[in-house]
Image (cartoon, rainbow, N blue to C red; front, top):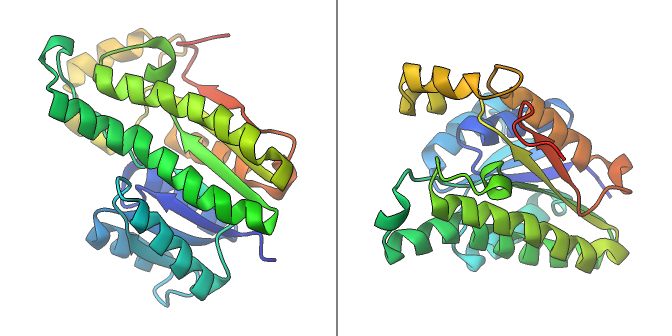
Length: 247
């Protein structure tokens, strides 16, 4: 069985794009799944215009059927995925007391329910084959309860860390590992575009290393946990936050 077939959710831009590029450079066939199919298609074409080793898939992480369809496509095209990276997420800055029930439900659906559905659908397929690697992108906010990115986002990412352990226990006997990575603030264009420079500088000064996180290093960590050699690591969380949270 080809061990190098990966699906990355939220791969049209940002951290997801970097993860997809890193995996592809390491020899993986990569499905770039995103609700923004246009951007995902552009990135996939930049990796492999022929589509032989990179393809874009339309995926709304709130819909279980979308994950089932993605699994089916990868089985038909490449024989089935062996690596799943749950990266898709969304944060919305909002004062705690101003978050509406509708906004809370949507943020939790994207960040937590989406991870649950993906682990459920792909985890079952992986278990049937006796092999798989799942990497969930969580967040420092889910560990510390920080609300700078929204309390609903923090709560959802805390749930992602718990789901990681639950699925890790459930799937371990079937050759499937499930791990998480919790990044702190990252040096990404979207961060510089959405946060005023002076505020970003102030945030950076609160980080012991005095620097924003390197997104390429997060992608390297994904590559490590996706490796066939990483079978002894499951239910773990890699903290990559510049020293903001130590344990």
